Amino acid sequence: MIRNLVFDIGGVIIDDGNGSLARVLNLSPGKMSVLKGLLYNNPRWSEGVMLGKITQHNYMLEMIKKYPEWAEEIKKCLSSEFQPEIVPILTNNLQYILSLKPKYSVYLLSNLTDETYNFLEDIITEFDGGAFSFQEHLKKPDLKFYQVLFRRYGLNPEECIFFDDRPQNLEAGEKLGMRGVLVHSLDDIKSAFLT
Image (cartoon, rainbow, N blue to C red; front, side, top):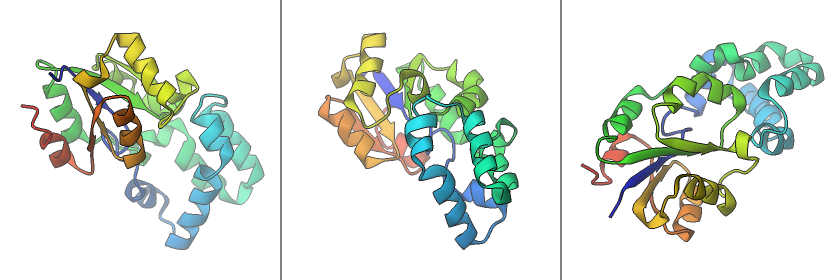
C-alpha cells in the first residue's frame, strides 16, 4: 500500500529549465550555452555548491571575480534576488501535490542549493519532511542520499512513490524499492492513479 509520496523539486515544483533563464538573461543561444557551461558544468557547482561545501553566494562572488565580463549575467543566475525569476514555482504542480496531503504523507528529496532552499522555505514547511543535498553533503542518484530520507522519517521504500524529472534518479530509487514516476508535466503526476 502506498502511504508516502516523495518529490524532487527541480522540474517538479520549480521550473529549473532553460526557458526562465533565457527570458531573464536575454542572451543569444550561443552565449547562453557558454554561460551555462561556465557556471553549471563546473565541478565547483556540482561538487561544491550542490553538496553544501560552498555557499551559492560565495560561488557567485568567485565566478564574478574569475569572469568579470559576465558579472551581470552571473549575478542574475546566482543571486538570491533573482531566484523567483530564474526558478519560478510551478504553482499548479505545487497546489496539486499539497492537495494529496489528506491521503498521503508528502516528502521532498532534492539536489538543492542553499539559496534555492531559502527561496522555497515557506513551501518546504508545507511538506512532512525532506532531505536536501546541500545539507546532507550527498546528492541523487547516490543511494545513501535516499536512505537518509528513509531513516529520518521511518519510511518503507515499498510504500513510497518517487516523482522526479531525471530517469537516473528514479532508477536509483527503484533499486531501493520505490516506484518511480518520470515527471515532465502535471499530467504525469496525476497519471500515477493516486486519487
